[in-house]
Image 1 (spheres, rainbow, N blue to C red):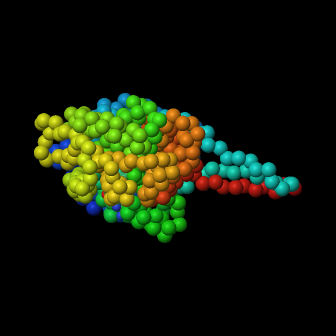
Image 2 (cartoon, helix red, strand yellow):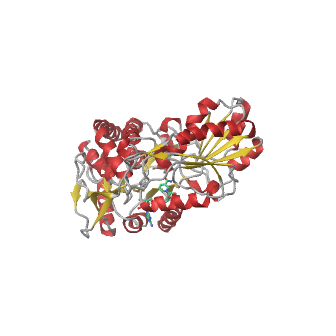
Image 3 (cartoon, rainbow, N blue to C red):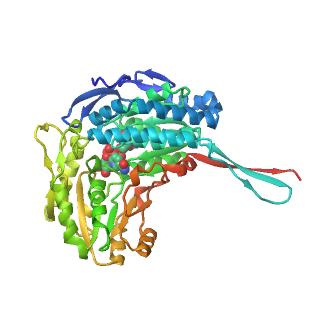
Length: 483
Ligand code: NAD
């Protein structure tokens, strides 16, 4: 067992207690860097989800339901401060659990603390409004929590996704049931331990690790929840939305993308280059907002492509704790999926690939970063979310063609445009179908404050910023007639 782990790993966290899962079953977590066992985790079942939902309901009827917005904010702020004291531990744990290079794992811990800081500060700043109405009336709105909120989280950015989703839900006074991914859930348990230390009342946060089709399905279909938030694959997102429809509850879906960066001839190529490559390669390409497509105008196409190729050739792959550019993929299954996509690219123009460094274990899930060029916009590699370190480059002639290609997938999560032409920046920002459009940058430093979410099959609902607080609350209109 990693010495950085200070909380029980094989328990569920329900009503402020660490308890064995109802069925007594556990699962093995593997370290993606070498596929050796890392820890045993609870295999939560429908019975554990029932208990967690009951605990959350109890919290709403009890101390948590009476906690003021100011105090909720203070608890979250304390939680953020506690996370900051554990950045080293959380970074090492996440590096071993997810396989992401240590610096990237630490940055996720810093981001989780930042979410608590932001939502802690915002908790008492979401207000209703008064509405001028007919003579004799006073009308105002109240923003109330939904009640019990379900949070199904993937393995790629556990800390960031828990931060943005659970942080916003708690800020608004919801009680949460969190089902982390079976591939990586240790920092979700760490979050629960720190929330307890921060003084979060019992039952306000419950964590039930387990398999998607078991604990996840039990949570998304539970009649005792009033909102479900899901980040993951399109297929599972469709099922979650179906389950939510059965209970007629709102759902937030964040389902990934095929996000383009569009580079015009007049762009500052020196400024663009690190973003073009980095926005795809981060976390070995396993990022919902990965920029897996780069569209380059013909005038600078070969020149920029050569520079991107140099970046790829210099890319180092190794164990998470080696902390080089790229770590392993999460699982052997994910490697198989990505290798399958690479095989489908055999007919494409291969520009460059990275290198696996000496000393990297044979048993890990490693895929070298790979850059393809001249990729037809309708090619499978230019259409499907690969979720690996694979990037495709597509040439274009003019603005109209760039827009058609950029918008020509099922997805619409993030996009960016690189140009010095101010009018074109504005036209492109309007034309691109994406929840976030960046001009002469990409990703904007994580953007805790910036609303984030999809068009099309990237999902719906908005997370991050104040939009998440609106999403995790419901408006009640009060119309008082006083004559
Ligand atoms: P997934 O959608 O299966 O898993 C995400 C979460 O959903 C996990 O917590 C999982 O336990 C849970 N889940 C799975 N089946 C469920 C069900 N029937 N009911 C309720 N919850 C369920 O994703 P995956 O299998 O881990 O990855 C497959 C693909 O999904 C990847 O290749 C990638 O394309 C995509 N993905 C996207 C994101 C993202 O951030 N958008 C994250 C992870 C995976």
